[in-house]
Image 1 (cartoon, helix red, strand yellow):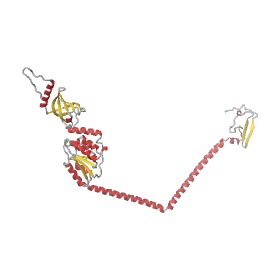
Image 2 (cartoon, rainbow, N blue to C red):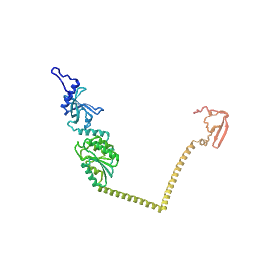
Image 3 (spheres, rainbow, N blue to C red):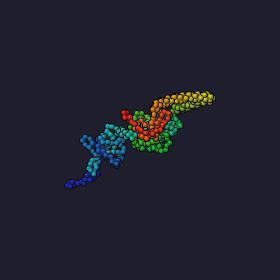
Image 4 (cartoon, rainbow, N blue to C red):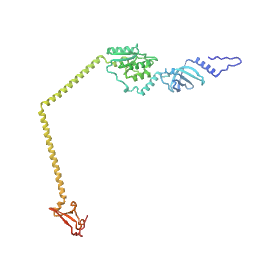
Length: 414
């Protein structure tokens, strides 16, 4: 503490720094342990990891700082508007001359901070998809090696061992002893999960403990354990020892068991149940073999019947061939008659339209001698000295035009 010297005639004069140090020492000596309740505002969380905020009530406010070494122990993420209880000491920030609280702990007022931290982390991981069913790994049907992550001296390992020895004595158990509560427990559990995954000696992992309060189960509500479970390539069963309450590990795990004993029962089937299952499989195999033999025997019988009576098969083929021939001839006859009738109709129409039919009634067909395909219908189509061809019913006559006389009384229509 800064000393102050003075005389009766000369008052003590302090520098600003000395005065600030005096005030700081006085505050820290007299308010080294103080509890404050207030609403968080102006919260700042820079990259340094420290927290800076203001605690206020209806009438006053105080600046607060919570350094990284202290705030890492806070179980929830603070937000503006939250009513909290902080423990710390009162100090002076000399550079600004501000009184501030150096906080070393923080809890939510009126509502458990652990519960708030649980809900915040649950919401975060759920949004990331860590709870999605499609990420769950199936348990092996008949595992021969099980990894167990729990306390080596707790009730959980004894419960698991009792169940496994009763249901399947030959199973191999790999115990990875860990702390299941305390500050180091979350790191210990997550490291054990990573270790079992690296060695790949376990076909399924049981992670758990024998129950406890919300504070006792903090390791199983931690983000580091949740992410280790989510990253595991070996199926993980959470068995925390609560029938109704869920931990974050329960949501992320591939399967949740209410107790360690229940987890062991889920992993290993009862020996009697396994024998019954084997008997059922044997019955199904025998039934399948019998049905296959029956089908093949019947198929052989059918083939044998065909081989023993080839004449009957040939006769059947001949009957089918004869029937096809009759149908083919009938179809041909029908088609032939239909086409013949169509041809007769067309021939009649052509005969009626033929110029020869007109010639047969006493008329003559006239055409140029050079192109007999052209029919001359009018006298004006012919010139004097033109060579023309006259077609009679019984022959043709070539002639030369000497004279053309037009009938003036007849109106010629083109």
